[in-house]
Each structure stands twice: as structure tokens, then as C-alpha cells.
Image 1 (cartoon, rainbow, N blue to C red):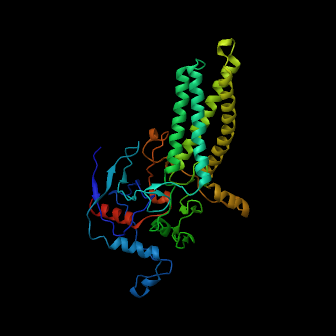
Image 2: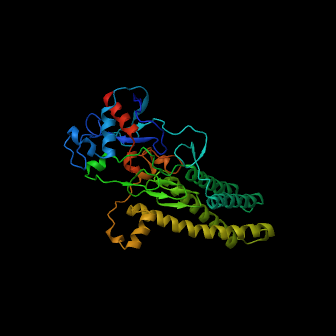
Image 3: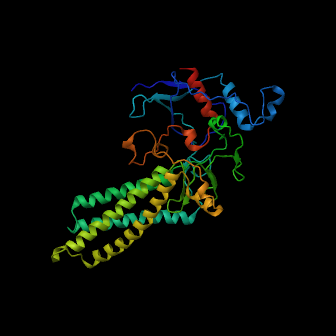
Length: 380
């Protein structure tokens, strides 16, 4: 597939996390999806100069992004088909606006996302690796003593490896932190929504369904909850990895319990009996798998309910407290807003998703992105 690149220079400084690769569906016959920047503001501005100071900050940023794009220099977009449907064409924003600083943390300038301030979360997330490693060791010892077939042990260890990979991606992936330069997406203005929330802690725009995490000290887009077992929040940016971790963990626990049950009830001679050490290892692992199976089952039901209703855990608890659950008007989440539009083959792997419309999924846009889109449209 051939790729064509359009180039644009950002006029607003600063790098922002959570504004990585994204795709937009082409609209119209010529593929132009430029934003309408000339809509009147909430204050009833009729376009006269003496009333320009009454415009909202976001609207003035949009106006500047739409009119100050005279200088164009560097690459930022590529065109390609990213869907099984050949009639749908997406434009992938390949501009790298991630921070280059060699540091860890949850601040916007940190190059690697990692929550190191929560000691309890660090211990709990490390415990996950210890327990999974223990289970792999137990299964390996059983295969070494000819109590399990090698392919059965390899299958279980593969599931554990995928679970740990998804756990690492959930922990070290930005869950959807809101940058300081974030502004409301233009679609909200087109829908007549002109009042927007601001976070009193971050002093930034706060999209709908986002919440401020006091542990990460950031506002997280589409935040579901802060998971101490992940030592990270679960939001729009890492929900896919979290769901995959739950699925692989649930599968691994079920797999191990079935293997143990078959060995227990199918043992007919002394050769299949475990030694004293292996027996204790299996008993402990069985208890761990049973508890983990129950826990992950409840978490999977909770996440599935949130996807089907479009209401996250925090919002659902708030609605229950206010007795307004029956008044919920959220729409169900589409799977492409969780797993991306790269293709079905990427769904089982902890690969960062590319969303069809990054701004719609995250609930905010960036002036730099708007200007790259405008430059791409002007140079097609």
C-alpha cells in the first residue's frame, strides 16, 4: 500500500502524552474533514472585533489554530487503508509528540509513564509477577517429573507470558492523561455544548467521563478506576491491555484447575502420584488459582457491564450514591474504541490501539493536531 505524507509545523509549544497515533475516517468525496472554526461562541458573538474578548478560551484557540497556519515544514500524517473494508480510508497521525526526557513518572514531561509514588501499588503489582512466576515454576516441575505433557506445560507458560506482557503494558502505558494544552473537541461546539468543566487540581480542561486520580495526580480520560494490582489507572489509553490481562489470567487459572482435576480424578497408579514437595506446591497453586479465578471473574463482569452501558466504575458508584442510575443516558462503548482499527489480528496482543478518531475517544483535542489536520487538507 502506498503512503503519502503531508507536513505541518506546530505553532503551539510543548509535547503532550496521550496524543500519539490516531486515525480519522475520511468524510466527503474529497476526504476533507477540516473543523468548522467559525461557529459562534456561547456568548452570542456575532464576529465583530469589539466582542472578540467575550469568546471562550477554547474557541479563541480554535480560531488561532485555523488562521495561523501560514508556515508549513515537517511531516506528520500518512495515508493508508487500515480496515478490512476497502471502501473505508483512514488517515493516521504519525507525528511523534511524546516527551523525550529520560525520566519516569506521571508528569507530562516524563518520558516513561510509571507511578512510583504509591508504594502499596508497587508491592501489589510486583506480587502479581511473583504469583504468576510461582505457577509457571510449579507447572514446569510437574512436566519435569513426567506428570504433565510438555505441550500442556508450554501452553500454560505461554498464557502466563501473555498475561504478564499485558500486565506490563497496563502498568507502563499512559491511561489517558489530559495534557495542559488540551481543549474541547470541535464536535462538542457543533452539538451546542459550550460550557466545559475544568479540573481544580490540574487547572486543565476536564472532558466528560474523565476523573482526577489523586494517586497518579493527573486527570485521566474515560477513567474506570485506579487499580493497585496494576499500579496504574485504567482509562481510555490502556483499557485494552487491562481487558486482555483479565482474559489471559482467567484462562490460565481455568486451564490449571482443569489440569489438576484431570490428574486427581484420572490417577489410577502410583506413577501419577505427586511427591510430597510437588503436592504442597500444587495445593498452594490450586488455592491461588481458585481465588484469582473468582476475582478476575468479578472484574470481567464489571468491565463488561461498563462496556455495555458506557458507564465506568467511578461514574456508576456516583450514580448509585445519587440514586440516578436509571437516568443514565450514556451509549455503549464500541469495541473499536477499545481495541482500535488496525485489524482483528491485533486484538489478542498487547499492542497499543490506533483509534478511528482519537479526539472523540479521549474527549479532547490539541491545537497542534488541529493545525496538522488543516495543513494536510491544504496540501492534498
